[in-house]
Amino acid sequence: MKNLDSTGLKRLHRQWRRSTTDSVALLLDSVQTPFNVGSILRSAAAYRVEEIWAAGRTESARHPKVQKTAMGSDRFVTIHEPIETIDAIGEITAAGYRLVGVELATDARPLHELDLRGRVCLAVGHEDRGLSQAVLDASDAVGFLPLLGKIGSLNVATATAMALYELRRQEWTAD
Image 1 (cartoon, rainbow, N blue to C red):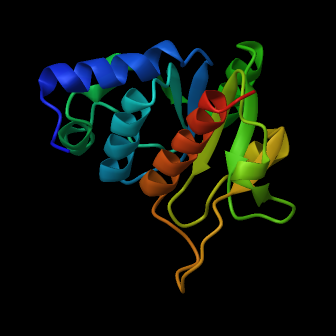
Image 2 (image 1 turned 30 degrees about the vertical axis):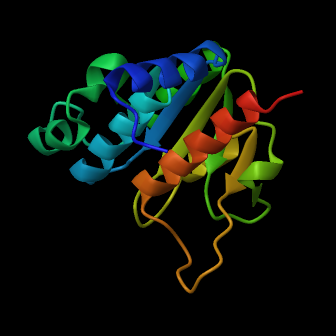
């Protein structure tokens, strides 16, 4: 076994791109830390997120610290900003996405138990307060990432990347 060269990497990723057709979006509900927003943008581009609504008090994709972390990946995603959270919810619904909150909340189910196939918009929230009540109320489902250690929550950028992977994994392994 050896590391793939650039041609090998292109072939590997092309295979996965061909088996990926579902439309995916993100709602950032007051994600304020620039480095988190930049990291989410990079993960979004890696997992072929088509649209991002940067709602509420979410830091702008144009912020220098966001740009530094995103490393140019924001050019691969359509970003709607600035936008009020309630307006973002309306646009997401009008675009035909199912809104799925990623949150530690009552009645939330483990993310892997939710059906994340089709047109899905994952919603992630503020680093400390999580999703706003408006987003929780508008969500078609709410899921969480089961954690096993002594830490009860993850950084929002890390949780978003894991949720995006789970969403794509479900698409790739569908019957």
